[in-house]
Amino acid sequence: MYTVAAYYRFFAVADPSALRDELRAAFVDTDLLGTTLVAPEGINGTMAGSAETIDRLLRFLAERTGLDRAEVKFSTSEKAPFRRLKIKRKREIITFNTSAVDPTRPGQYVAPEDWNALLADPEVLLLDTRNSYESEIGTFHGAVAPPLNTFSDFAEYVRENLEPEKHRKVAMFCTGGIRCEKASAYMLQHGFPEVYHLKGGILKYLEDVPAEQSQWKGECYVFDERVAVGHKDYKG
Image (tube, rainbow, N blue to C red):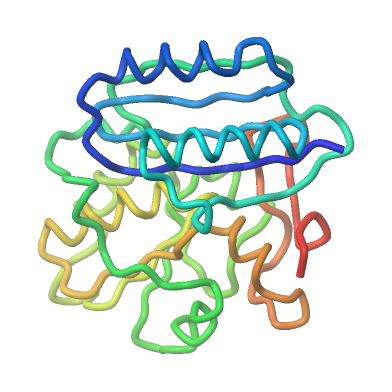
């Protein structure tokens, strides 16, 4: 059985190449599989391995990057969800293609256990910030799914379809939290007064909220050999 850990953290990385090399050297000879991206704005990864290796990885990341284990999304897989280990340096840990956003100044986090109450507010516009092929197989009840081919299309969608004066309360979600966190920073910094995003994303919601209380419909697309996951893949 593989333990799968999905994580990210926005923070200023002084030397992304050095952090990449250190991480690679520490785990290249282990059973760790998956991808971690390192950029000046932070780290982003989904890794799989034995429970012992994942524990060692998270202790390493806590020491080097300040990653909080409580923010990590855990699941399991009977088969290897990745084929090899990849640790890469990138310009961004999630591509947005605009310099007009500071991801360290996001909107308000909403914990999974508080998400349903927010969705019940009729004044809230709920946005799915994932790609269209992801939202087609599952999303939250009442969500608007913009026609996005890539995450970098989101800023254009906002400019052409939303107005701060009209859409005063906006809540967003994505797979693991990274896209909606960066999107929330963009909207907040462009005049939208109340911007919320699901802390830990859909994966944390599936992990923490019991299926019988869930507002999630369908399955959640994931970027590994599993293709999609649901409540059945998480501890309720």
